[in-house]
Length: 144
Image 1 (cartoon, rainbow, N blue to C red):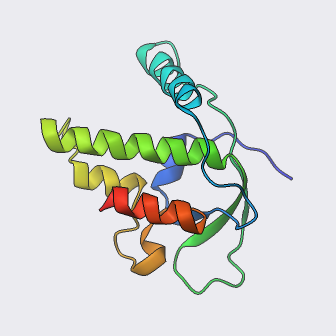
Image 2 (spheres, rainbow, N blue to C red):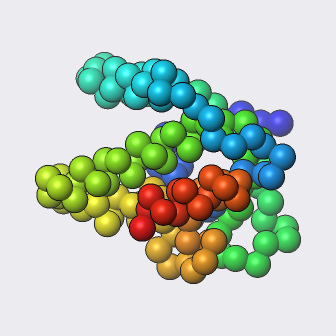
């Protein structure tokens, strides 16, 4: 196993798809856990001295051998709750951009296409995050 550091937004921007295996639990973070992550992100973002900040790990395996899509499928072993929460936060920020207008040239559509949607894909491949069946329906409803 190899561990490496990655900028979360740069990593999410790549053409791949995080897939949550069916044996993983459904999304279950509480308001408290979501708030802790949000406050951690805000703390890191408010400091000019922080070049990088650890917000937790995402462990995955690449499953490109048997996949017909142009996307690289990444099977998430650990970090599903954090990855899902970050995706929900990104969607909330995209909605904020819809209401307030573009920020530094970034529109809500671009924001979603960078981090949430594989805009050239169709069906399930359209989403950068594929959750378990019940959670996926909720995520898709939020992203429409």
